[in-house]
Structure formats: C-alpha cells, structure tokens
Length: 407
Image (cartoon, rainbow, N blue to C red; front, side, top):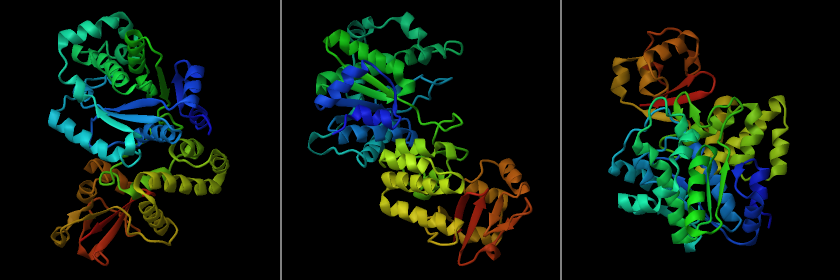
C-alpha cells in the first residue's frame, strides 16, 4: 500500500509539516492516531470543512485512526485567526445543538465501528478546568511575546484583542495534550490558517510528555481568483441538504472556473490521479465534461449516488432540454399569495434569490430574471396565477440559478 503522505502530496493537500521525513516513516510503519478539530459555530459543516474530511478519509483508508474533535469548549471562546473582530459569544445550548449536528454529518464520512475512528468533544475537559491549576500546568509554557508575533494575534492588535480570545491557543494546545494522554494521539491536522495554534499544541506535548508528536496543515480550499471556495453571493455552501440542496451543490461545482477543475477533482474526489489529469487537460467546450464529472462525484460523496443522479438529470433538463427537473430547488407557497398577486422584487427576496429590492431591481433592469423562459421586463411586474402552468413556475436568475415555485 502506498504511503498516505505520498497520496496527500500528489493530490495537493499538504501545506506545512513538522519533521516531514520522520512523519512519513511513521505513517508507513504503523497505524497513527490523529485528530482534526471542528468548532461548532453553525448547525452544519461546510464545503470548506469537506476538504478536511477528505483528508481524514484518505488517512483512514490507509489504516490510520481519526479523532473528530468537536469544539464544544473552544467554540465558547472563538478562534481569533483570520478575524478582524471578536466572534459573537454563543450560548452553551446553541453550541451543544451545533455539536450534535456535526456528529451526525461526520458519521456519514468516517467509519466509527470497532474503534476505527473516535469522536470526542473538548467540552468534556475544558468546561470544568480550574483556572489556577491550568495556568500553573499549561500557561507557564507559553511566551506572550511569541504569541503576539503570530498572525492569529498580530492582525488583531490595532483593533483590540481581548484576554478572553487570547486564551484560545492555550485551550487548543491543551486539546492535543489531552488527546495524546487519552488516545496516544501523535498528529494534529488542520487548515493552513491554524498553523500557529497547531504548533502551540505540538510544542506543549513535546515539552510535557517528552515524546515525538507531529503537526501538518493543508491548503485552504480557494479558487483560482484567490477566493475562499464555498462562499457565494447567496451565502455559504453547506453539507446539510436542507441548507444547500444537492442540486445547488451540483450546480455550484458544475460552474467552477476552468482553471480550478483539475485542482478540485484532486482535492474533493477519489478519482485516480491519471483520470484527474486527463480530465483537467480538456480544453474549451470539452472541459464541461470534466465539470460534470466533478459536480457528480462531489455531490455523490456528500449526498449519495441517488441524489447526485437526480441533480445531474435536473441540470440536463434545464440546460440540454432532456432529463428530469424534479430535483431543482423549490418553494411551496400559499395559492392565495398569487390570487392577490405579489411583486417580482418581493417574490425574489422571499425566495432568497436576492437580499434586497435594490439587488432585484438591478437584475430585472439587466434582463437577468426570467419566469418560464420569459424575461421579466418591468420591476413592477406582479406575479399572479396567470403566470403558473400546472401549479408551478420556474424562475431563472442570471444564466445558472433556477428555482421553482409550487402552489
């Protein structure tokens, strides 16, 4: 079996790693317990998290044991990394609910049977810590001068950094120590924006336990334009099908930039690299075939083959004139709304297709809104029952966003 380090490197995941040759040898000689932390800031994981989940799946397939650590404790502080302001403080009940949703989603991707993977929550050891004991055992190993030089904190110094947030690195570092002692965890993984925090835990375990542990980060999921993948004008791409339907995920992946196709096939699917390179090398109109494969494979991994097939058929129905459009996102609305009539700008906003009347007005003025392939010409258009056929209408926003209204 190939060493998983070679697989991760070939597919483009790895950003930074401590003692790379040592770690490669370790991963090739024994089953290594490793962990990734997920702060429970929302009630669903995102497409950005999915890259980390892919790494965990590659590692587990190579015989290593993942720990999915839910940040029920650290979420109560909030990671200052990459932020310009303090994260909103959330209630314990809200965090616990989010953590339960994360657990459900992670179980779709990792095999937790017979101890092959572990799920834990750092609330189990962080919430009841004694402050003085913690500072005597852990705090003494952290230099304030060094911490202030790290990007996670340095970028916040001008606008203000609370002592509350300053403690985040200590808490995350303590996680690594706890998991080492509890499960013999030897490796922490995370996104490249977590390098400072991860090194804090790596140093702490090495100092207190006098053992070799390791740290590795992988590149953030970004587009060729340098934007964070999974962020759209309409909002975040979620793994929860109730928040981002499979069709929307499919369409999002189907419409990626040509320059990103090979990269995303390598990072977000399990297709062999020979096939990834072959698809990535397609040019002009042919690249659309590769985009279809990308969209189908990602949707299949996240939502299953049946939903991926439905999404693909719906897309082909809308764009190629064939297939089944039943998987297109839809909203059920009260028939009375259309008996009285509703303005197109209000309808777009109610459906979540626009955020304001101003945005809707611009789209209509630019010819960017259609109802059943008939362009909406006026911003004062009133949508009534006369616009419906078989109790439904299909609204198109721009060239690629479709939404049904059913009554």
